[in-house]
Image (tube, rainbow, N blue to C red; front, top):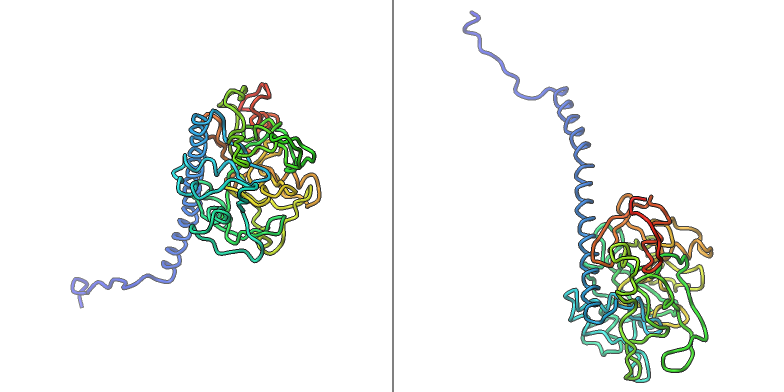
Amino acid sequence: MSVANRKLRLPTAFTLVELLVVIAIIGILVGLLLPAVQAAREAARRMQCQNNLKQIALASLNFEGAYKGFPMGAEFGVGTAWSALLLPYMEQTNSYNMLTMQEDSIINAQWAAPLPGMTTSPNDPPVWRNIFVCENPISAFRCPSTVMPVQAADISGDNWIVQKRAVGNYLGCVSGRIADDRRYRTGVPTPWGTTGSVEVISDLDGVMIQKVNHQRIKRNDRSFGLTGATLASVTDGTSNTIAFGEAEPDLFAVPEMGVLRENNQPMMGRKDHWYIGADDIDTTNQGDMSEMLGSTGVPMNYKKPAAGTPEFAAYEISFGSRHTGGANFAMVDGSVTFLSDNMSAVTYSALGTRNGAEVFSLDQ
């Protein structure tokens, strides 16, 4: 047979070597692309987190415009937190209208229920309806990078429980200097002429404070106001003062929530963060301010130390995040910035005070 009449025989499939080469190339490409995809996803999550803080910061400015003061950090002895007061300015008016922020001779509204707890409903009587609102997840109070569950059971230090409490990631800045989440005092004068025991935050240097000790939104038909610090008191500059920041609750404490009563004695407890209100803030012998408030007097992304130490008390009230290298913060003027956890401790502390008269640069 001549060469001209001979048919060409083409391979009908890949050889084993060729297939292995193709698989290796695909593996290398996936290895190169996967980190880029993950980085893009984290960048999107970080941006959404910044949008959440922007929404919270603008709500606080709208609140300040209406009431001539920023929302109080927490209503100790009653249970309400700053986040509840911002609900009408975050398109959550229905939730706000369900709340009863009062604990006195007229009504004793609760933020948790005795064990084993209760299944909540918007149709509950006002004394229990606050629990329903606390169990309702609100995306603006949750960082998309968090590894926490959306809801978790939580037994307070008073041994009452919220079965499916919505977990939060944003704290109001109560100070730029303190490193302890307990400021419990006895014999403190009240605005209504008596004395009592309460967590004292009215003298702190942050924005999310109380105007007076024992401040009540309403007590026996008397109002003591919703506000804490005023805009005029932010003498360090609204763009140089933190109002809100990120905080990541302790993932490993989640199994304890709903199983173990929280120990809110000094230097004990859990790094747990929530929103709307809380039984530990309601109960006067607990006063766990770190559930809703943080301090830049503690380094960002502070590592968890052993319970029962001063370092643990600092850890509870620290800011931090799941974002690499730092965390997002909202300033008083409504701007949002990402701060490095390697920044100067002096500068970081100064950003948390509203009237410290510090001289610093964000580049430090």
